[in-house]
Image (cartoon, rainbow, N blue to C red):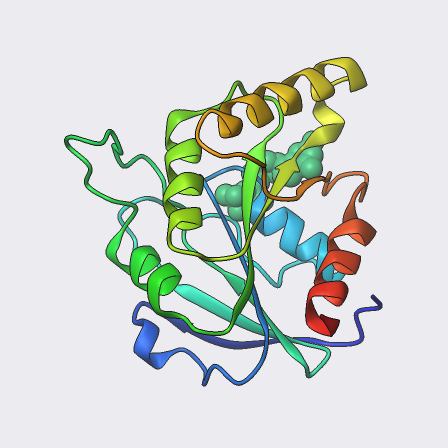
Length: 197
Ligand code: GDP
């Protein structure tokens, strides 16, 4: 998919104020520092469309961008440092939970995973929780340029294995680097196909 236009539409902390759900929507989420802003900027060929992480404590918002006048790219807040163990689950944040549960035009929620790390508990809980809500998911491994092919494959397989402890199959897995632009076309083609489906 060629990106012809990318326009900032709105930034709200309240899902009721988000744009009318009249276009397919592709949302990006991950822990803070996972490389979400860098990836959004790489996908849209912009330098500063998505701003780098807000500091914890600042108001977090859901940011809508209109791409090619036809679909929304959504930058969701990080699910951060919340403890998500089942017994003391504080949740992933009211806004995120409301968005995932109620936003009706989500074509895909891309969950970003830092490809350098061992599978992290809060990433896995988020994925299993969001999948359980019936939202179409895909996993994007970020910062793939930071490790060699062997280690990259090893980490992806570990993550896959961790997901399969609860599920029979994994969501689609994509590998990217905002630095080298690896996987950019794959993500855009994935979006294109989902729109056309
Ligand atoms: P966010 O908090 O998820 O929005 O993360 P940012 O996009 O702000 O990235 C966090 C840090 O990781 C920054 O220092 C980026 O330069 C760096 N980073 C992000 N993506 C990549 C990547 O693909 N490759 C490399 N080498 N660094 C990256």
